[in-house]
Length: 93
Length: 153
Image (tube, rainbow over all chains, first blue to last red; front, side, top):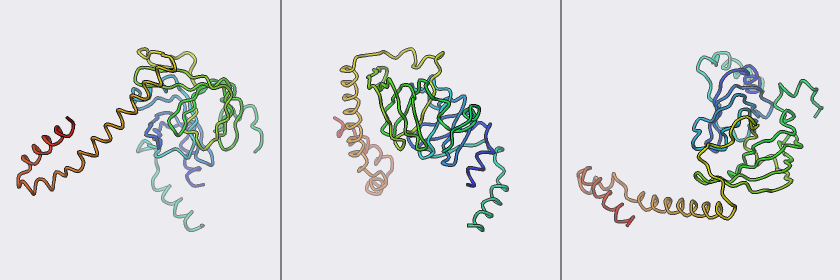
């Protein structure tokens, strides 16, 4: 639940999602759900030449299970807030 | 699972916004399917109508018609909405027949196998151990280069 809430606060930010198949997609975070499925808008692929089929894709739905990393802008993260939230979750669990 | 209200589909992560749209579905095995989304569920299982597989090998591509498909959600990597106003593929790509693309796929697979084999052969030549043997790293590097050339020839 912690990361679901965290991503909900990140909606509207530019992120780069790196998938387990090494595809990296940059886009605006449109929405996220409890499985951490991600919907991105205004997408462009990082290494476009390697993935020609993705040329005309502008919005996409990414299944949570295939995400390896979500790269965020360094100032997009309030690390202390996350830290406190994690501690609270750990205490509660 | 409750039905989404007409406005909810634009803000949630449900695939309802993609219904009846032409989509690109990437599968875990690397296949690229395209077609119209007719149905979905909470596991991202999907029903795709007028589906076809787009096979791409280098600058060649081929669309192989598949018909009506049900995709099990666990195999789905990504579902992308295709922008109808944009070109789906770079201009230099050439469409070929199914037989041609299958030939190209086979050739690419064989090339990959060969590359993998050669890499394995070269890996056993451990540079550090050779440097100790020759007591000179430059000689060891030269030795490795000569051995690689001999292996490839």
